[in-house]
Length: 286
Image (cartoon, rainbow, N blue to C red):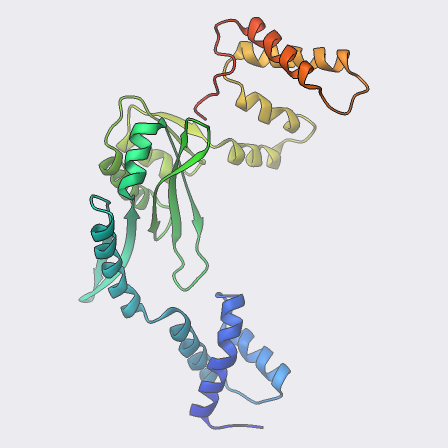
């Protein structure tokens, strides 16, 4: 049956909350269709839209409340983790202040990178599909064990050169300008250009996973299985040594499903001898 507008808005909000938890991007039209089909009620679009807004506010809070909480979050970080950085960037439109960008490196993360990691950072971002449709951007490094080490994270509105330039300038404020630095990114031109402007002396590298994915769009065949080992090799001589070593292993144990420890030891010694002082065993910073 048909119910009154205010009652149905509350009812829609209750039902829509469950839908929004599963899919934050769901639209009012889809909610309207699913509710009418499942509950055999008659609802108009305006009522469903209002109900969805109520549900979103209940789940995520209002824009104004979220914006105020951001400054509380900044104050709490600065209190609990002194000398951590929390940069909030805003824009003003028609007299109203709007959130634009955020950058946070915790002080222990900055110290850990500068004192215990390789001079290498990797930067990437991913789309957010919640109420705010921006980008979550992260800066990671590699420690002495070759494990990922978090340096900083933040939010930008979109992947354009201006936003990336702001983000990279914040990175520079956090870590300084190391005399030796490698910066790994994807093929995003806005990010690549921002890195060149902010860290002109840095060695720029392109994320191999992105490169590999782009290669697959244009080339085919079994060559892709050989790309990852080549990318991990630290020198051209090491690449040759590993290829020769693999042939040696296959020749020694052609029917075996695995390697014994003695084979691995012999293989390592053979490769080290083959590569000499070219850096065998020293992984590249990428």
